[in-house]
Amino acid sequence: MSAVLSPGEHVIRRMRDNDLPWVLRVERASYDFPWTEGVFRDCLRVGYGCWVLHDARSIAGHLILSVVAGEAHVLNLCVHPDQQGRGLGAQLLEYGLSAASRLGAEMVFLEVRPSNQVAVRLYERAGFGEVGLRKSYYPAPGGAREDALILARALLPDND
Image 1 (cartoon, helix red, strand yellow):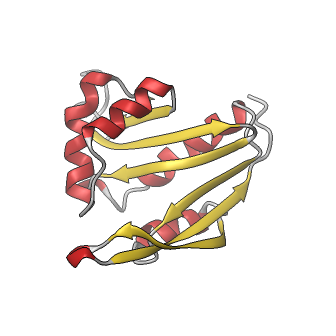
Image 2: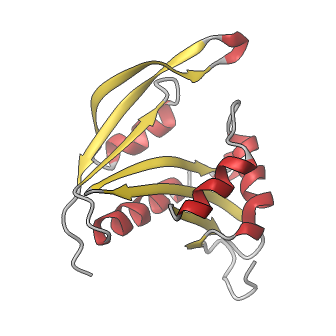
């Protein structure tokens, strides 16, 4: 990681293959059913928007976003539990929404577990609203399944 960052300062940059050990640590600390290394590698290989948020010591979070035909999809937004509650998830999300807008997306969609109320509130504060439900979408403990809320938000053109 960069040694020129001030204490507590985080920056966002493109994810690289050599970030994956750190990304997997964040993912595994955050989720009961984390993505695999292969899924992350596939996202990098096909050219999805893959970013990490890091400080001088480690990666604190990551974002995976696809943009196709005027639509963006937030595939994975994750901040290490030790780093949550500091606005880092909102920072990553805003970065991704701006990138999606620059790439021509007019709408952005995502799925989120209803039980993940921290994430639901983050997305609601960012202007997302519920547009649907995917029944039994996520794996849950004991072989059960959990529904997914489908959220969406319109994007304004980014004139940066």
